[in-house]
Amino acid sequence: MNEWLNKTWVIRIISLLLAIFAYIVISIDSQDTRAADIGSFDSLLNSSQEVQILDDIPVSIQIDDEKYVVSGVPQTVTVTLEGTVSVVQTTATQRNFDVYVNLEDLEPGTHMVPLEYEGISNRLSVEINPEQIEVSIEERATNDYQVDVDFTNLDGLQPGYEVSSAKVVPETVQITSSKDVIDRIAMVTAYVDLDGLGEDITFTEVPVRVYDHEGNQLNARIEPETVSVEVTVANPNKTVPISIETTEELSEDLRMISMDLDEDEVQVFASEDDLAGIESISTVPIDLSEITETTTIEAELEMPETARLLSNETVTVTIEVEEWIEETIEDVEIDIKNLNSGLKTSFLDPDTGLLDINVSGYETDLANVSSDDFKLTVDLDGKEDGEYQLPIKAKGPKGLDFSLAIDEVTIEVE
Figure (cartoon, rainbow, N blue to C red):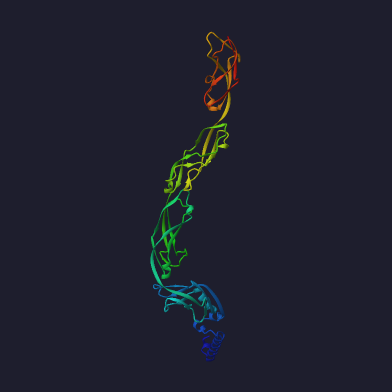
């Protein structure tokens, strides 16, 4: 081999072949001189054209942001790259370029400005969408504001609980924006969701929101962007007596003996101020016209509008009643009054001198009634020998209705 290489005509042939190969390479990629820069065979393989569209490319702003605030600049834009495959793919993959708007030499006001880029090879064709934008430049203003707390789902607190206090840490935030926005700030608020809360808790990283007088959220830089809110809850309550309320009346043949509760008191949960005005809790009125006998019912408790919760929603009420009944008191003795001396009497009708009495009253009133509680008398004043039909006078216990089996007796005086 060395002998061949030492021959002049062999070297000339090899040089000619290399020259021909170099000419072919240059001819294939005559429109892209980058093959000489890359210096490899890969440039030959990647010499075809490609287009790629890159979305969500961030936009930076070149301005003195300590002095000015800019609005109207989109957060991202779309960039279209066109060129050889290798350069397009490398640029699209690495994304080590910047898209920006240069506002350094502009005064406050509204301006139409182009979107520019840097860090992209000049061998690529670049298109930015949008090409230009309308921006507003305003003087920057900063102020400190106290952060208020507002609650969502306040009704979602666990039954009986209320918020007793809420502390924001830190209490103030620094807000930076245009002077116009700063002048419009009306509320700086941190919202806390109370759904299901039944104990003290600290909410962390609660976002701070800024609003104008109409409730529109304003766009501004807030430092810090989040706060902690320490929420303390309580469940004020007190125990009050239960009163039984009724409506309508018992039927005429019934009398109330008693109405008793299984529990005389109930625990009421409300705010401290509202608790002061609650002295008792009543049952929903019980309709007495529906009571026909001694019975036990579940009565609902009437919860005041100012109360949040009662320890019991119902109570057991035992209603004891008694009926109007009739009984017969047998063999009540008839007494004789004002019989003249020397005379004697005998009963002809009734021949026993005893009489039955029909008594009506409530069960407890009749429980201990006997014949001794009644007095039947016949008055013989001025009567001489003979047979007489005389009325019977009767006295009995108060509160009872009674009647005699007969109103008159037949008596013989002799």
